[in-house]
View 1 (cartoon, each protein chain N blue to C red):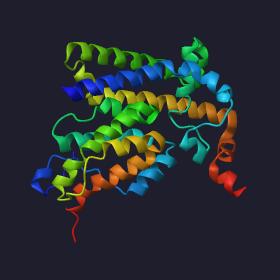
View 2 (cartoon, rainbow over the protein chains, first blue to last red; view 1 turned 90 degrees about the vertical axis):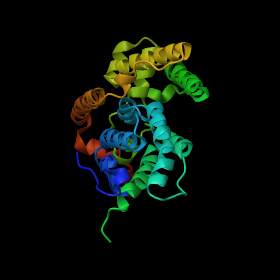
View 3 (cartoon, rainbow over the protein chains, first blue to last red; view 1 turned 30 degrees about the horizontal axis):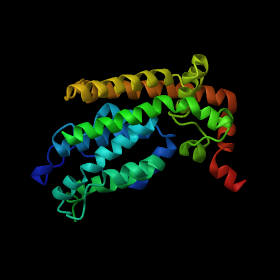
Length: 129
Length: 149
């Protein structure tokens, strides 16, 4: 599995960086199939960030087909954003679990885009200037 | 410990709602079988998504119409049974005060098996959809077609 090199704290984290708009487009182009893969990868990234099983991978992949599982997935995923903020020196980034869960109840694609944009911060530091 | 109990109580309430509310859905929404889908993917593209039909499958199942349930979504019955199992898991956890079956829910092989089941089912759903409606039939239902036609 590909991993990023710096900072050392992030070494274990699988790379899953992509444009939030692309997440939306791929979701529609594949008629929603892409979200199975996206949820799986995000669950993997989040469990690596938290260094424990924060998100159930089985629940994550059921998410695109089951609203309550998706709400649970976004709630748990959003809770790790404070750690993402700490790792990326973004103190303004707080626990957004409840907000993502509420948005995912109505428009899960928007929650996915928000979450992806925050996850991208992990890799932004490694992009050459 | 407060979070452990709180999460399980919320989950039990949510799961009970998922299992029971579909029984009344057809009464509240009599046009359910022919009405507009709530799926954003279906609305935008005109084609069903892998989840399309699961809600109606649950409704049919709660009314004992197994064949109708399977026709709406072949995995509807399996999903309903899994929901019941998860409900039992949370009740047992609440009683015992500790998590059970953790390995199953955090297992990557289980996750891939679920993805495979939905992808295979979806291929059959699309095949059936194309046979019934054709590519043009699907596109005509898309939001873009309706917007520009």
